[in-house]
Image (tube, rainbow, N blue to C red; front, side, top):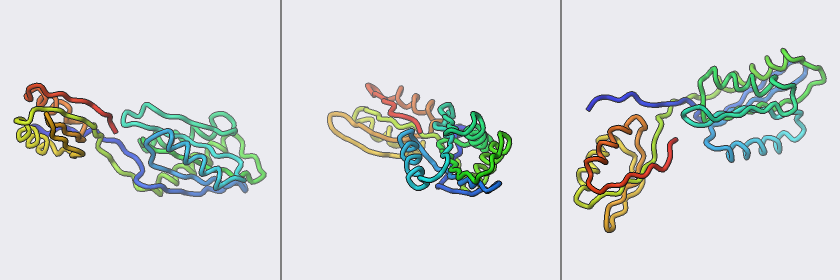
Length: 206
């Protein structure tokens, strides 16, 4: 069987943080691994509760292995001076499934456009550098239904493909729920073609 190049993405393994001070202002940067917008909303709300006297909580995030879903938020800072430099560091480190939030306590001296951009960029970079960055394989979640007599061959083939078995149901037919590396789509399609009356359902990718 020919080797297939894995499809991977990078994210932070665990939450991390860093602090940057300039002209009396404090910028507390937090990096989080995330998988949904609901999770992001909860984190931002918790940061505001923890830092209720802060001036701003600015952030940027990116979700999905395809890296197409993202958002930036300046939270009242001049347009382009907070969310954009935060997101720029997400791009620079090539991360996804990540949220970076920077809490600012105003120190009484205006930093100006350039100073703000530099402060948010520097704080974000430090938080990412303090994190452990991990590379993750992109996995597809499937449900495969097939005949009883095909069970030995199906299981043997999928084990060779190093599937992550989640659930097996044996009734009138066999139903197998599992995860498989996205790079093995073609191999799975070939297996399904070899199984009479089989049905494959794709349940998601992450």
